[in-house]
Amino acid sequence: MKKIILIILFVPVFISCEKLIFEDEIQTDDPFTNFDYLWNECDKKYSFFEYKNIDWDSIRQKYRPALYKDMTGDSLFRVMGAMLKELRDDHTNLISDLNISYYGNYKTGQDNFSWRIIVDHYLPEDYYTSGPFRHDFILNQHDSIGYIRLPAFTGGISKTNLDFIMNRYKDTRGLIVDIRENGGGSISDIYKILSRFVNEKSLLYYSKIKNGPGHNDFSSKKAVYIEPADASIYNQKVIFLADRGSYSASSFTCLAARSLPNIIFMGDTTGGGLGIPNGGQLPNGWRYRFSITQTIDPDGNNFESGIPPEIHILFNWNDLSKDEVIEKAIQEINKPD
Image 1 (cartoon, rainbow, N blue to C red):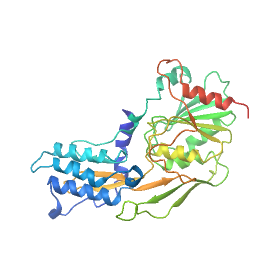
Image 2 (image 1 turned 90 degrees about the vertical axis):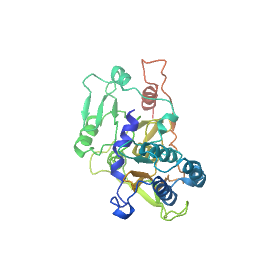
Image 3 (image 1 turned 90 degrees about the horizontal axis):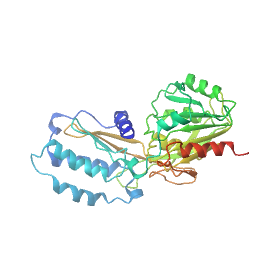
Image 4 (image 1 turned 120 degrees about the horizontal axis):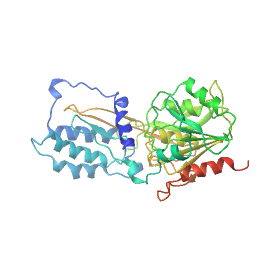
């Protein structure tokens, strides 16, 4: 599904802080060496053991007995990939020429999005595509509500396409920004978007990084702020739509949106993914990554497992003539101030 593909596409972006070329004397395909290397790296650097109440020692005891000398690469991958799935984290992957492991957090909630229903019932046939955005006025709302779909944080958001969108919908009563099934990508896109919805410097969240071998060894919290863009600002109502398929950068967006006064987050709980991933390379050449940070909201909450919406509304698959989430967003925008 699309959500998994997005996660895979952005794996190479984060694999940077470990040495990727091993000396000849430590290159080995030995399954025990590679398993122990990966387990130890996670043990020292993964950021959510205590938050998720994971007994990493018992997981080692569960999977290491499955190893044996001269096992095939596929068999070793299955053992090590299954071990990483115990972290319940789609920022945790094992990547080889044989396969890529992932958890699949989107499967923990119902499917809550259909692009076909949106284009059939809410947008004109010739809707706009501006960079990564698909957008237009919602049908039958007298050009009073704009709809903006962002299927991925591609890193391709520009001042040009944001200026065009902000100018086109500047006179609307409200905007619907749809990031359902957006599996993440470039975190820099978040700040470009949110900077168009604030009038002053605003605290979004705090971040802390794993900095010691203990499972609870972290740096002090660092505050992350957003400032208004040096461009047009939109001050009317903004509704962000998200679901369990909204992961990583999408969860960061929803977490930040909860801190901003003119934005409402609606839909289903996001998929989480608030830990920034990083990783390296195993002695056999396979690559890995996992979360090494934690993100805390301004009130001290850790929502790694998913950001709860301010208004919870689910898609009804028994009625394909409408999108209940969009309908609720329209109602919210049209409510008297």
